[in-house]
Length: 118
Image (cartoon, rainbow, N blue to C red):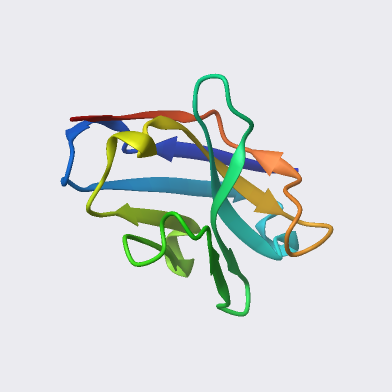
């Protein structure tokens, strides 16, 4: 069992920055990758970024060059640095932990609201 606690969401103006944090606990040794997904109103949940235990990253085309996923192994925490935010980035952001495979989430955080005003 892996548990994640997220923090850092909020309201920001377009062009601004936010950093999301996700602290993992429990069976963290079993985690192959962690990631961030988001779900906007009326839309399906979509991948934002993933980071494998080996350090490989994957980003959605819509956030490449603006968002950066990173981790602090000592704190069992993964971060999502979001720069140059746009109104279309408004969504609930979810942290994920991938145990069975590298790219399919097995556990989810509670979700963080990120709102970007124009």
